[in-house]
Length: 117
Image (cartoon, helix red, strand yellow):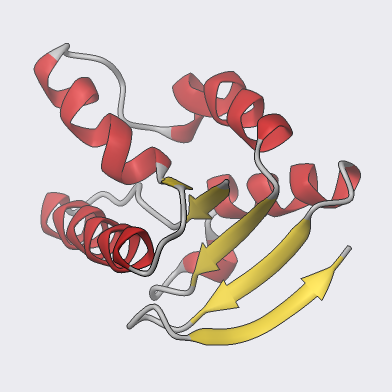
């Protein structure tokens, strides 16, 4: 199973909506290609909105780390801001600590680089 990390939080709700949409598109492409994917943004955005839950990484940190500990590898969707995202950087670090493979994807979902950490 793949954990699809991607940036989400932003002060502009339109940026958050765009990031959510892109995570959904790439997760769907991966699923169509035969992969089993968990995307915290695609899977929890609606829950946070419907359940009046916080949208930020601080609330979802432990939830996300549980998934990272159970997946085979993580893919990082390199949307603008991915490399300054507190959540994405924490997810990559957790993967490194667990010895998981990290694959970096271009914004369209194409493979950019893959490293075993």
